[in-house]
Length: 428
Image (cartoon, rainbow, N blue to C red; front, side, top):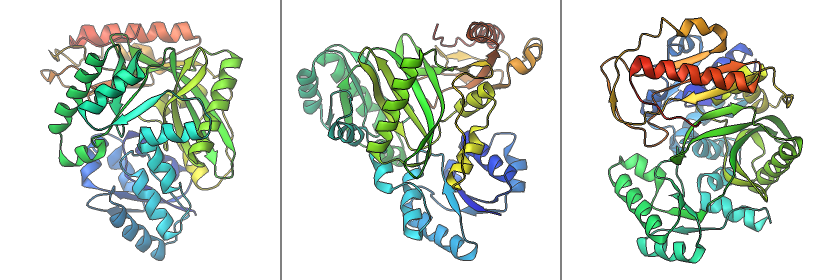
């Protein structure tokens, strides 16, 4: 049986672990207590852990030296056929470790490029691939100079950011850009040493892109070929579009738009030298064509893989494991088996949860709501969402048409608000 080492986890990681076990792999899970909060509370974790062949525990799985030593010892004792990680914090360390040990994975240089939006943009410009104009800055004076130089509507975000933390969009004056930068510096100062190291001090200021936001999900087979899974449209909060609220699957695109997204995405991945794995590319469909927001060297996060698997009827986690094992995988058809909507639960204001008794209405939806999670308990104080770590849950709604799926999503959201008395953000 093939031996696969999966480094660190979140909810997506649990899906990958389960898929590897179902495919008959010998599965080693390399983990750190630092990150177990991402998945330890999930009800499937205790049973899943019992099925794993071994668990290797490190102090910090984002430390390349620790990971290299552990992977080398594991490979010497029980040869490892493949490695993968779904975690933003650990992909680069794993790439370094895999190269040192001699196990096929992504090139560390390619992963590092995607972790820094400035380097990512620079590579696209060098390759002649359309991308927004940008500047990377490190001081308030540089921020003001960049805002005046670029002009027009702008976006500011950490160059090495994640989960839309401290991002600000559609800024229309140097004063607005400076205010966004001040919020970034003040917010980062209150974070832990580890999180400050992740975010860094650099910010990127770039042209605002007007259009619909989509993400392209695809796999690279390691030999220059790419296999399509899905294009989904990302839902955004109208009052602050840096806050994402879920997705529509599939994105309502014409064949011409789909072809343009696919061709552009493959160009981007080749330029960034991302060749093996499942990748998540976010872009805006502008009047001039698709333009990259960010490329991620990992599978999409949150409930995204579940939404796509439920909509197309094909398992993204199985595809993820198979592609890292070097097996042939098939792409998904453009037209899905049914239509889906995911809704991230983002509090619109501070509130106290009144109740979590959904028994009077949630079961009536049956398989039309295949996934539902609301984390707070009755009486919990809930704060307004600020970024991607503040969501209090999610659900997925399915329907035979896009309209029916959206209608069901709205109905569930209405009932959820009525039950919990927590105001939740809406995209529509």
